[in-house]
Amino acid sequence: MTQMNKARAGIITPEMKTVAEKERVDVSWLARQVSEGKIVIPANARHRGLVPCGIGEGLLIKVNANIGTSSDHAVLDEELEKLRVSVAAGADTVMDLSTGGDISATLKAIMAHATVPVGTVPIYQAVVETVDQEGGLIHLTPEKIFEVIERQAEEGVDFMTVHCGLTRPALDMLKTEGRITNIVSRGGAFLTTWMLHHDRENPLYENYDRLLSMARRYDVTLSLGDGLRPGCLADATDRAQIHELMTLGHLTQLAWEQDVQVMIEGPGHVPLNEIETNMILQKKLCHGAPFYVLGPLVTDVAAGYDHVGCAIGGALAGLAGADFLCYVTPAEHLSLPGVADVREGVIVTKIAAHAADIAKGNPIAVERDRKMAVARENLDWDTQIKQAIDSEKATRYREQNPPSEEDVCTMCGKYCAIKQVREYFKDS
Ligand code: SF4
Image 1 (cartoon, rainbow, N blue to C red):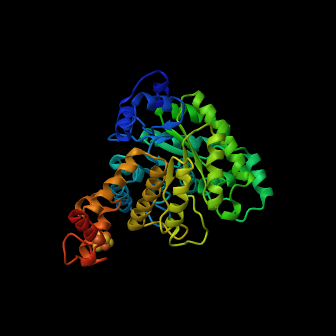
Image 2 (cartoon, rainbow, N blue to C red):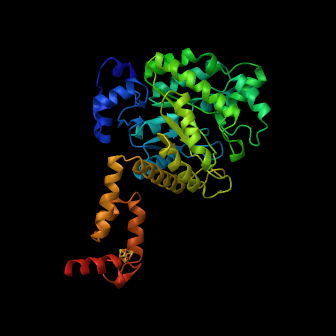
Image 3 (cartoon, rainbow, N blue to C red):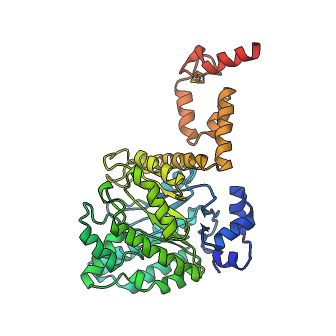
């Protein structure tokens, strides 16, 4: 039974209790949201040691970190270190996007060490194995895709990106759009190549019932991918993107009929002034299913700083309704991120999520900033460090340039504004 299935049957699961406690929400309310598909709890029963988290309306915005090998760089220990650093920095989930080295061994190791929900994009492994064994992507078969999905589900994967909405009509629309960057999704590109070569429909769309039955058996949350997400601002919010989104809305309803938990993936590269529109469209067209955005990046020219562009877009998206932010690292568009890039990506995306949570009035988020404000007024440095999203960096700054008077900092030194006014207020 899936979490949705149990919620609909009136069963409060241990996972629901954990999420409700962490989020400080009523568990009956949470179960109702799960039953209606507004919240998902990605929790494959085979994922040992999982501490579940909830994603969706009324909860804190969650942050995902993408880790995993590439064909050019595949070192298992590095990926495990990225996992450790991501979770330590506050990532709520990780996705193993490995396409290099021993993909099965990498996933197994990540599953064994991850206490957060783990996601994958199974078409990656299906394509890599097909290319290795058969010599080319065109030899990929629907059977192979489903075999990999089942293998990863058995391994305990909690959520999977599946690009089911990338259909032939959507591709036809893409061709007439005259995009600059056509397709930038790896999974979308794999499927498109296969579909056009074989003149066939998307096997994940054609065999959606089979996918739902697997997802239901393992309670894998489907993250319905956006293979046609815009890869540059000029391509944002076009007909191809919205066509795919409309299909995902239909597929969401079909999944809910089978008690399968669903999230929807969204753009991509989006100008600031179009972000709110994108969030409203998704929530309307996909019936309130949780929205998982990849960025969005608000400029195309921030190479080396794309994590900043992502945080700006992520904060606005979160305020406008996005429930789940996929991080971007400083290495985006340039290389496979290293451990330090992963950490920085998580931190800036946490800041974006937190800023949106505050603006939406989430009491946990608001309380944290209040504690920080009180600590600042009290010149209570221990609490300030503890409340900081990046306590490590805050400690480093404090220690590398210590003040002559212990209770202030070197910014104003003996002219510390807080200290002066506080003493004046005390005496007056
Ligand atoms: S020295 Fe200046 S910056 Fe530092 S705590 Fe005091 S007022 Fe703030």
